[in-house]
Image 1 (spheres, rainbow, N blue to C red):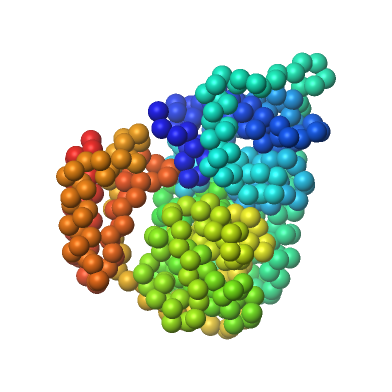
Image 2 (cartoon, rainbow, N blue to C red):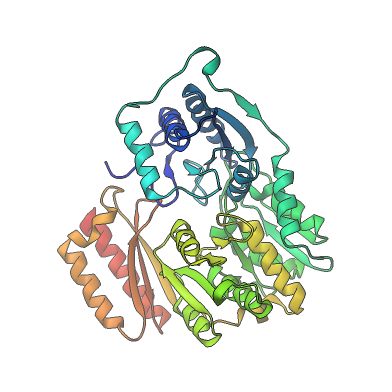
Length: 449
């Protein structure tokens, strides 16, 4: 069995891989590890996205929390960044989000935040896992009055909305915005925040029923949003994912604006205002080559990390940066929140549009997006980290890297959350790189099957 935690918590098919029993154990071990140094009865905040398995897993997890003598505060359906923010604001001891982000409804996940709203470092996740594997060795299970209890709060989402609009106050009247909520956790918070700032909001996919989260909508399926922006003659389209920690945009011409472009737009605007710390943006190795060339041209310092917003955050904290993120739309504004925040990303982007008076298509032209092909190879989850152990695969990667040397790049990496090996190639010829990426992905799939 591989490591229980991936790049974004514990993920799996709900009730098959991620069972109520495992959720309860994560509640017990997580509460124990995160609060064992406390000299008071600890409290853990729990929120979830809209998927149907959320209730089952949240209640199992909270039962685990209470069984080791900690209290739980259940805030219900909320974006991941809202739970991170509120964990810190309410001064509770830890936060937990039940969500599988952009994945289909059958998946779910459990991710932890510490008392300051930060995702846990690998070492602390490993400690939680070790406690579970030891059969809860050393964990005390109190009885009587020492058992924990659950408090239910329904007002938390308004506090998150208020925080977002007070962080970036502006007048959006006159802007028509189409918002795709992915039938997920943004269905209320994103729409209300934009309306409160005066925007003319057209909301789509904002009627979650527990089973439709991310289904042909949101930041991973933007075709409908592009069409709707054109039909409505809107100024901009905004697409969130299931737990609303990422956001991608569509310009007034129906063209996608990805996370790299969004960071380029916001980063340069912040630099012009003197609010971009050390004129630095932290991105991952998956960011487009055009993004780094843009930084060079505009006097920005560009830091690179491995893939995963947690690694972006770690680097941001190390160097004191206040802007970083991923091409996929996870963008972190460390002055305002401790994790990727789709709503803050949207408001920062809209702020640039308002303050410059420029349409999004013009703003996005600050960087040239170089042709990029990304193809996924499906492999067994326990094999995905070991693709270089297969001589045939290693040789093909070596040959392809040499072929694109000086004219592009080849990046192979296992997915942190799914049973996939991702093949990404950048180059000058879109058709060529797509063919090469498919060829290598098929080889990986066949050899590692």
